[in-house]
Length: 451
Image 1 (tube, rainbow, N blue to C red):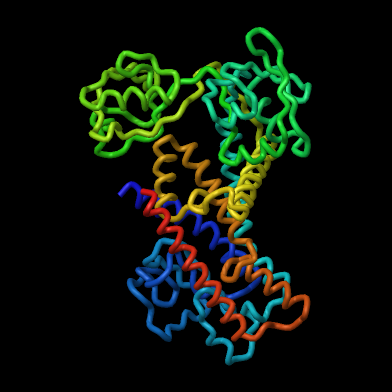
Image 2 (cartoon, rainbow, N blue to C red):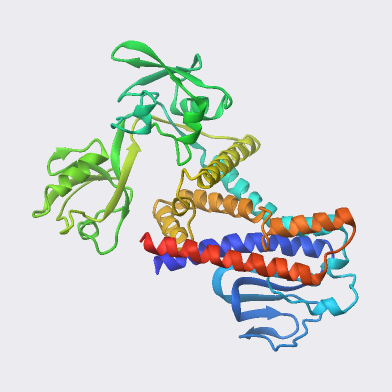
């Protein structure tokens, strides 16, 4: 139920924001909006000024008399706004046999049409910027006061780049760095068109590493490949009805020791548990400021039901931003995630990244929504902002049915000053809708088999 609830909440917020953009833009452009729906398919319940609040579908020939029917529909996988005189996913073309009316979409000029069709994307972008701005303004930023990198395992990207465990980064392209944010900015953001020269202190000596920009770009799609020292193993997720849950372990717990062995890296956890499948293992956790002592007995498969990572536990500086200072910070964050999105798309199309690893459907959205919510309100807001940004980017792609597909058609009609025949628009919509359904089915299939 947690997965279902968080999925519905997440999708409802994103869909409402997106569709409200279309709705508000249409109203401002003096277009009639017949339906504002959250979800697809059968109308569960809704409200309009003519019939009031009602359950179930409205009568087939029901006339809203220019009012909007606000409704919740059965399938919570999206939503739509039905604008009078527009060929959309409702496939309603009854208006085609009548002369265009002043309040219809088709009667408006090109600019108002483009305004309406892009308003949903703009609202999703606005939500992303607003969330990033709010986090910077109200909470600020945690800066790791370290330039020393954590343990570098063999065959990792960090090792391939030439780094070794506990290298202290002194400068990037001859510019000194004093904290981890400067390390990340100098390597990932600054001088994006040039290679990077990094000076490190290793065993009391200064050494220089030359890393190609292409290597950095290709290996930073899912996050920076370096991590600051000191670190501690942390529980990311605890599976329900697992040995870890029975032992009282929770997401966010730091793992101090396992089977009386001090834990410093994640590989130790896997090795110790795998070697102790027949007995209960004592474990020491740090939860906030409390030390928790418990024990856990691995299942027959040698697992206790957790996913784990590493967390920075060193000195932290809390940096706050003013009202206006937070704005460029928000745009910079949105830009970073946009670059990551298109880099992943490039990898998918060039065969360097599997489609199932780049895209997720309802199941993955629900999983990540629950994980982020368990990690706290800020983590959930970050997830919501990134999902809203991805929704905006995908929707503006020039694909039939999506806003970008409508945008191209409207633009062409404006250039040639001639509206495409309704039949051609319907063919485009049908083809696009069929392809979109196939894509969604494939994504959901990948979601399910990855469980």
